[in-house]
Structure formats: structure tokens, C-alpha cells
Image (cartoon, rainbow, N blue to C red):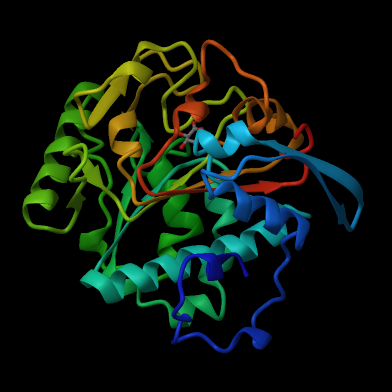
Amino acid sequence: MASSLYFSAPFRTLPPSPSLPKSPRIPFQVSRLSHSLTHKSLAFSTGIRGVSGSGRFRLRAKASMAEKGKGKVEVFDSEDDLSVSLAKYTADLADKFSKLKGSFTVVLSGGSLIKSLRKLVEPPYVDAVDWSTWHVFWVDERVVPKDHDDSNYKLAFDGFLSKVPIPPGKVYAINDALPAEGAADDYETCLKHLVKSNVISVSAATGFPKFDLMLLGMGPDGHVASLFPGHPLVKENEKWVTFIKDSPKPPPERITFTFPVINSSANIALVVCGAGKAGPVHAALGSGQNSDPLPVQMVSPEGELVWFLDKDAASKL
Ligand SMILES: O=C1O[C@H](COP(=O)(O)O)[C@@H](O)[C@H](O)[C@H]1O
């Protein structure tokens, strides 16, 4: 299973793996590629074939991927298979951090990511996870009321948070009564309080908050959070949380974590599905180089980066 690469201790409260859904990951070949990518000294240039339910595809990796620390790459036959593995990965990390320090700080995106978390709110995880230790944040949020259809909070509440017993006081939504700039400042102040009270760790390397896990989606243009290609916000390197009033994707007003915060994370999962996103995935993981990197290419955490791709998103690799 993917998670066995991370932890030697099994997730004790869960049933033994035979009763869990079988690993849907396109097996072995991709797993070997993934493993190799974590070894920076390993120089290789290889074409790797995997056979999925619906045909043959090819993954190609070069030494430069490993050297640049592009992370581990997991490719799944379908989005459904991906969601099974993402649930286990998230539950394992929650278990690890909760045992280590009594809490688990997790940052959500909006968009399709929330649907891909659906297996986490089903058995066995819904009953086995200790939800009381979770602290939930948003990597970006649209400046709309919390009950608005564009709200990332509403999306997460409807699809995830309303189904699990995370204490409401540990779910940190933005203040939707404030305009964009005020909401960003307010959220940053909230994070600073939580750092002071040791709920959120700090990166010794950067001084920015260090979340245990960020679950990031990616748009078809290669944006992550609300950091869009070519927008000056991608270069923000002092603020923790900033705002945008001219988002190319509606709604225009949003707040977003900055790259120094994103990249101080202990773990990042980049969850990407669909052929419409294959181009940016190729830009990030393929062998070519572009002079003006897409935001997704700027995701480079001090901890572990794992790509969860369905085979359509990986189709250009
Ligand atoms: O606007 C946003 O888009 C991205 C990507 O969304 P997706 O539906 O294409 O997966 C999302 O990660 C971000 O949180 C959201 O505000």
C-alpha cells in the first residue's frame, strides 16, 4: 500500500488490510517509479509501462525529476481508486501526527479535491479515525458568505465535515463578514494565535507555519490554492495569507495561503484528475523545462510531496 512507504507502524485502530479495499493503485511498475523518485542520488532515465483496466500507458521519468525533488507519483486506474488510496494516506498521517503530538493540522482546498475525499467519511475510516484531534484550515477561500455555492467552506462542510465529528471549534473558516483584505489579515492573525498556542507548528527552516498535511487540488491552468499563472501573488514571500481581487477564475475575490506557507508543510498531496489537467501535470513532472513555471511547479515542500493522479491526468507523462 502507498502508505507503507511512510510508516513502519500500522494504523492500529483499523481492521487488518485484507478487509480493506484492495489497493487500486496501478501496481508495481508505477510503485517502483514512485519509490525511485524519492531517492535524490538515483540517476535514471526510464520508460515504465503499466497496464490498467482500460489499456496500456507509459510513464517516463528522468534523473532530473529526482534531483529537483518533484515528489512521489502515484497513478490510479480511476478517480474512484485514487479516492480509496487518498483516504488511507490521510488517515495514516492523521494517526501518525495525533499519536506524536496529540493533534493533526490539515489544510483543504476547494474544487474537486473534496469529492476525492469521500472514502474518508465511509467505513472503516469514518469510525476508526480519531476526529477529535483534527484542526481544519483552508488553503484558499472565496470571499463569499459561508452558505454561498462558491464557498470552499460550504463545499467541504457538505461533502466532508458534516459527516465526521471534528469539534466545530477546530474548523477554521474565514470571517465572511470582512472584505478580501480584512479576511486575509484576520485569517493570518488566527494562524498566528494558533502558532503561539502550539496548535500549529513552525518550520525551523523558514519561520512560516508548518502544517501536518496540505491536500491541494490543481486547476486546468496549473493554479494551486488561489495562486494563478502569471499573477504577482505567486511571488509573495512575506505574508502568510494574502488576497486577490482579480482572480481569472470566478469568483474574483479570494484569500489564499502564500507559497512560503504551502512549501513549509510537512506533507503535501497534490490530487489531480482528468485529461483536462494532463498538460500542467506534464509541465510539472515531464522532462521538459519551462522558463516561467506554473504555480503547480512551485509546490516544493520541505517535507514529503505525493502526487495522486488518475490515468487521464497522467496521460501525457
Ligand atoms: O478555484 C479553485 O480551484 C482549484 C482547483 O479546482 P478543481 O475543481 O479544478 O480541482 C482548487 O484547488 C481551489 O481550492 C479552488 O479555490
